[in-house]
Amino acid sequence: MANPLNLFGVAQRGMSAQLVRMNAAASNLANAGSVSATEQGAYKPIRAVFSEDLDRASGLATVKVNGVMREQAAAVRQHNPDHPLADENGDVWTAPVDENAEMVEMLEASRQYQNMVEALSTAKQLMLDTLRMK
Amino acid sequence: MAQDLFGIHGKALELRSQRMGLIASNIANAGTPGYKAKDIDFATAIRAADKGMDAEAAGKTAALYRVPVMPSLDGNTVELQNEQLAFSENAVGYSATLDFIRGRVDTVKRALRGE
Image: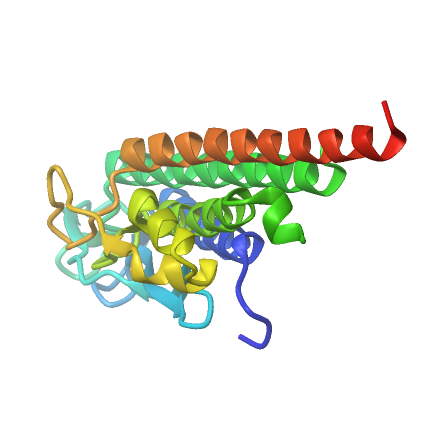
């Protein structure tokens, strides 16, 4: 990072990280129940992976999104011979998305986003008070 | 001059601001696996600053890892409710310090005007 990190940088990157996480959960929810003809073709849930990003000059730590990775969950086999995508055994492969887990993931991400907004607005107010000395 | 006028409050304000950044870092990293929450021990820091240490250095020496009440499985030691409490406590301290400084400024202004 070129500029020294300040509180606004920390909050901004923390909030974008939570948004990436929420997008991943939304993608998983959108693909829940999607069906594929092969086990390899089935949708695999995606998950954002975070790591700490420490700025030694200021001692502040923000969040780095290492990437969005696919989970290793196995596709669910369903016997459904009438399905147009069914293979010779009459099976189709469904995306292994746990909808409850994804809802919890979204709730957690949005709560942490709200926390950052709250901290940001408090910090902003205090800085304005200092500038105006009121 | 400014140092005499504001006494310890100038350094206190700087320390409060530093601590606010640190706690915001903890809140931002609430979901990062393995992140260890840090906080400034304000009493130690302000004592060091009072003995003539630079406020930034005082804050860095008094920055300690937080001991979690209940450690989580992924090694993250952020407990959001504690961080929110520390953040608001620190914000109130910041406002109070700001009030002290404002009081001094008003006093000097009145003296200059000869009231």
